[in-house]
Amino acid sequence: MIIPRKVKFAAKKKENENIEFRTFLKCNANDEILDRQFAELHEELFANYDCNRCRNCCKMYYGTIPANDIEKDSEYLGISKEQFITTYLIGKRNEDGYSTKHKPCDFLENDGTCKLGDCKPENCVNYPYTNQPDRWESLYSVLEAVEVCPVAFEIYERLKKEYGFEYRG
Image 1 (cartoon, rainbow, N blue to C red):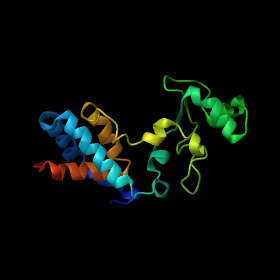
Image 2: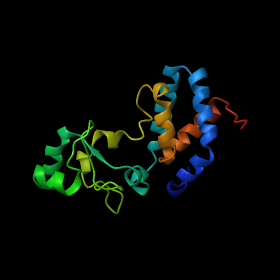
Image 3: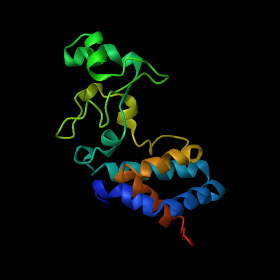
Image 4: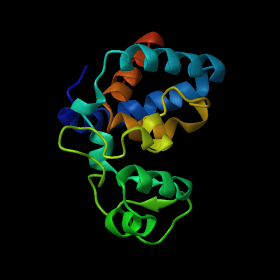
């Protein structure tokens, strides 16, 4: 598996190939079979992967805290909702909730753990979404994840082999 600090560079090198493979999948893959393939590879690869040693997703994106999570998250940290928002979040709510003030995510600890522990937002828990349904419909978001997550990168590379895809670029 590719090491976390090299995944963005490797994905950029393969950008045209990955876009062409996305088109290939859109034209040739059965959506249900592709979902199953993504899910199986996701389970296999994440079974032995320690995300705390990478956390590219936490480093490269702002965190998003759903409005419904504010109360439990602030309780977990032992502070008021107002303190939670003032300390960690941009005060203006967007459609998905609130964004963290900084990138890397304000909740990322030095050891790769999340300050929110088991209260970590569902969108963070599910990243890179490669085990979620409807991958065929959202292959562009998969391409974004391939640039961030070593596991998503590996899944995409294995799918190319499974489909016998050869880039002619």
